[in-house]
Image 1 (cartoon, helix red, strand yellow):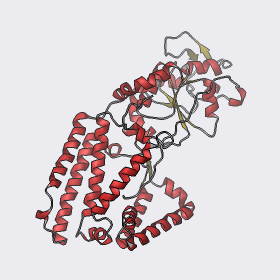
Image 2 (image 1 turned 180 degrees about the horizontal axis):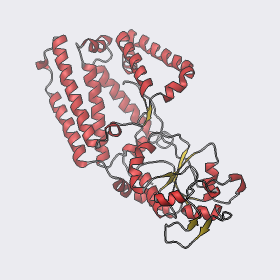
Image 3 (image 1 turned 90 degrees about the horizontal axis):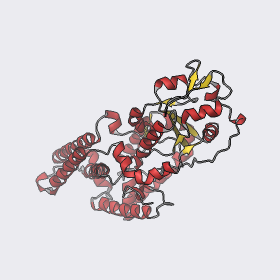
Image 4 (image 1 turned 30 degrees about the horizontal axis):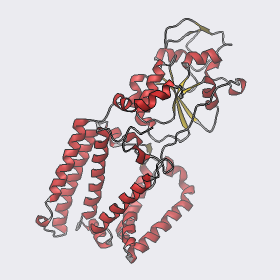
Length: 413
């Protein structure tokens, strides 16, 4: 099947799309070329930014960052890129701050960051080569010592997949526009510093930079005017690919497979119960989390915060009606490994509550609870957490873990 989003193939692993790395190589070459012609292979020019004499580094790097931001969210707005498929590095606040300070000090002393040292080394500059060797030694040293502070490195200030939209609770377009304005203010301020400390004549600078600034503002305004696609719009776009999956019942997994998966230490099974709170309080599977359909969009950022690769989501309602709607919403938001409890909680109870006198079947309408309970005990019924060893059920396994792409690199450029 052809992907719905034209840019999606370049977010796939090499095994699925070898051209991905060819595109990366071309982008990397031209990015390095731009850095070289901008003077980023010269340590004196790079170090001059810390003395406010030459802010080229700030202007070039922030131009690249802000331009990429505008293009990414504009591509998302017009439907050629799904931002949820773009890898966003997890935020480890305190390790990030410490690492930034160490890198900044190294930048001041050596005149390079890891990326610019590669640019310098590629043109056979001795200082760039020496810095690059030092950077490689630092990588080796980190790998050999991280075991001693592993827990702090991975847990201190961990915020997961965090964006400015999550922090400030603002629409994407507003955040994009504010970041563009912030960058332009920094560019203006940088030029004033260059004029004062570097005695630079700004009247001789190319006026084309004003056209670039205008283009960034127009792009940000376009992101606001077009807006980001809603969950319903995303589903409409992928429906031709995903509806056959529902029709062929490829994601409706039997109670036996859910029970086996819950008992499997190799899997991280997250149960999402989308029934009304009253039904949930009467009975729910052990460890299930109650979330209403209208609240799923609030839950999406949390689910996108890079859970373990072995995570499986199972959505459930009394039958399958609301669970199917929940599956469609989560799938539209690019949440991986989402499945539906086949037959819902009613089918689970028919399978595991036969010997509980406090739970008796009653007639019920579609997607209504078809059982009566002696008390609202929630997950304290035996049927909520049956012993997997006592129930040897026959079913067709359907869970296939779809692993997200991991980061391929990093650095300052």
